[in-house]
Length: 174
Image 1 (cartoon, rainbow, N blue to C red):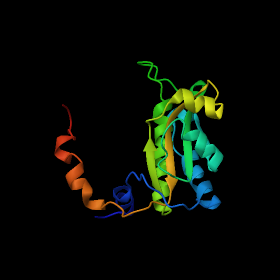
Image 2 (image 1 turned 60 degrees about the vertical axis):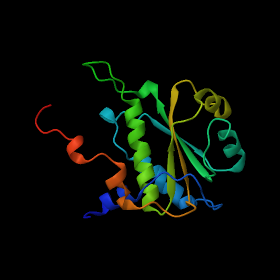
Image 3 (image 1 turned 30 degrees about the vertical axis):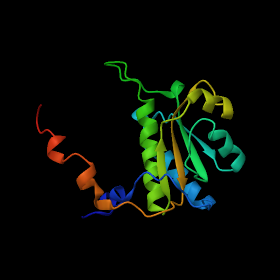
């Protein structure tokens, strides 16, 4: 395998068990910076990050989802008042923008020796109520972050777990 990015991407996997060890503040700051610099449609920058990093807040989060015992979570939100809308079909880009930011954070975490789990199985109403999330913000996903417990998955697993390229790529036209 060539290239450090592809190696990084292949080494990342969803972790559902974490060590009882806090994420260092400088690493958290780096993760947030990775999300901040992510590209957004027309540079509207609709992303807002809610950091959950203490036990009281994690207990509130557990009412809305399972953060799998992670010591840190980032709720990635999209400000719908800052959405860029494609004029041809009215497609709103806030979910896409927020997902790109989440992906930047997730891959940055992997690069820093941290593990993550992308969570979309959460109750938005409970999440809103527990954290007073304003109506203008849409909670798009939650990233559970910490030091993974257990044996990492093989970067070579994709040969068995992903569709082959020739089944998903078309050249020129369909």
